[in-house]
Structures are given as C-alpha cells and as structure tokens.
Length: 262
Image 1 (cartoon, helix red, strand yellow):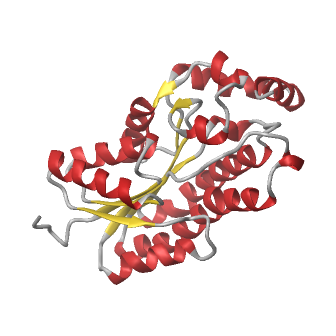
Image 2 (spheres, one colour; image 1 turned 90 degrees about the vertical axis):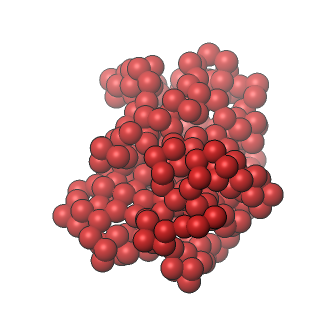
C-alpha cells in the first residue's frame, strides 16, 4: 500500500481489543494512519488487515509488552528509527486484577504500575518533547471513574487510574502553551475483555452497575480528543456516579466499592 510519509500517525497502545480497538477504527475512518501497539502479534496483524482493507489507511504494528523495564523507550525508539511522524498519542493499554492486596503477587502489582502509570509518564515525556519541537500534538490518556474513589480489592488499579487522571489534568495546563492538548478519558464499567482478564465475572459490581459498550466510550473519547477537552466522562450514568462520589465521604465510597467488589 502506498503511503504518504508526511501524514502524521496516531499511535495507540492496547489497540487490539475494547476501547483501544474502537479508537483505532475511529481514527482510521477519519483517514489517520496508525501505529498499533499490543502484546499479541497475531491479533495485531489481523487488526492491521481489517483496517487497511476497510479504510485504506497505512497501518504499522508493533508487538510490545509495556510491563517490561524500558519498554516505553524501546517503543519510542522503533517509531523514531522508522521515521514515522506522530502527532497523536493514545495511552490506552492497562490492566487490573481483583483480590486482596496481600494475596496478590507482588510481580503482578509491579507490572500493573509499569503499564498503567510508568508507561504513560514515559510516553508522554518522550512524545511530548517531539510534539513541542514540531509545534503541536494531541494526547489521550485513558483513566477511569475509579480515579475518584478508593478501591478495596483492586487497590493498586484504582490508585493507578487516580494517578493517570491527576497527571493528565496537570499536563493539560503545562502543554497548552506548546499547542499540545491532553485529554483524560474517564470511562466507567465498560463491556470489554477487561472484566474477564481481571477475574471480575462474578463480582457484584459487574452485575449491578450500568455498563457502556466500548464503541460509545471510544466515540466520546475521540470527539473529546479532537476538540482538545481536558476531561471526558462518557455516559450520563458515569457522570452522575462521579458527581455522587464527590458528595459522599471517601470512607463511605470505600465501603461501597469494597462491597461491590466482594
């Protein structure tokens, strides 16, 4: 496929499923060339073929595990070595696990922090330098409504999302003078592969709370990114839940979430 090397790419992590995959489709529909990043090389190739066939946009794939030490720098180096111009960064990769903190493996908690936090920080720094030099760019960081409350039985995950939201809001103001927009996408419970991977199939939270589909969440996030919004909370139920948690004491929020995730 012929490609215009001058057309900037959107780089999306965690791009083969869920919100990341829906964002990739929206970007491709807009005619944006793509760099897709995920761990599963076979699935990446399948997604590449789907996008190129349907939307006729150039798509590059990078099989990459962001939980490894130095992973963000290695990813950035691949992009630079191939001279792929990027003006949109989507930090969507992330995972969580449910269970008592003392019963979970330390190595898994560390990997979660590396993917959900360190990779976001490092990629924003590395591409932020590039965006500043080229006079602009766009960043979308996927947080969660979990960012607003403590999360018993998912303590590390909730804390990582609180970091992502705070970090993104701060960068929104820091990066604005350079023509760089930073948007935090804050979805609530969403029907994706996340619940199965986190071991949440039988918890009350997934049964009692309204869950959006990934396509609707991605659409709100992509529109918010293009408009340069600071924070996007998709769905009326998610907005109401965020506002209600602000009215309740944090101790009560923690007890409710602990019960829902029990």
